[in-house]
Image (cartoon, rainbow, N blue to C red; front, side, top):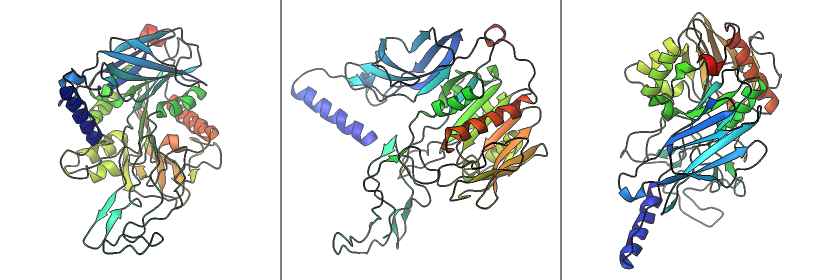
Length: 431
């Protein structure tokens, strides 16, 4: 993206100087996106523009808000000159989704992530979905004096929405392996079993997937970006229920060490916000493939490990826990849903594959394993019930096969939370 944008800006400036005309650079995508109920049957969207530090002319001066009503595609959008937009008269029980593009005379930015909401009734406090999965990344690489290539057996990477250029796993890693013909191409040779297939990646639309199951469990929901939480624009303590989406978020270095790694699952800012949130009567549900390994692999002073142990009440046992996605319940009081609970581990066109789920284990006497991986019986999920409640999955919730299974698992999470929940008050009158 950076290279493409640099080439685009160079061409634009060259042509502008050649023809002695003014130019405006296309803006960058917006950040800190939020979709929050502001009144009965009313949602207000907020976001922040992002400045291009290399190009002052890239500032947006207006925005396009796109809306998708359940069962339909996105509309053609509406213009607004402020980083805020309100939608009224929501139909109860219907899921609405939104994305925003920045706009100036240079063109339209790439779209924001997609946030979804569902209004059920005014007496119900909504579940807050926090979208913390914004990673896109190439596969891992292997580079030694003997072997070089793409090591997707370590990390398949995360395509931006989908991948069209993956043909199959590399099998020739010898840089001295010569081309013989097109059937024996030497170094870099790969299997061709994915030549004609599209590979699913990060759709930036997973609040919808979580929201569908939250609604099935009888709850309203709203959604915000993790940046809005970390920078204090959303106060987690305003909500009793938080669903944190971590997907395949994990610390990812650049190809060369020119910048700091990105996409940490639990940045320190987020750790502080979660720690502040988890007070008596609060409930946190989080899921992701690297909820344990990313904390342990990046930790140098045990801050990350203490956060997992003492706040979230689990510790990391192993990554690459299984290659198949079978699960079984070990606590039927928590989950007695479908017997064939599975999640997706193979590359496909509809849902990103989870190639390296984490095994996590309880780190507190009040925590327990609730699900195990069927392949080897390692612990797949941990639930803690104390002054506050936490349920952690070592695999992404959105990767669970079949809507019926997702709904049953989400219902089990809320039933676990509600064992210690008293009478709910009107969210709008008693916030």
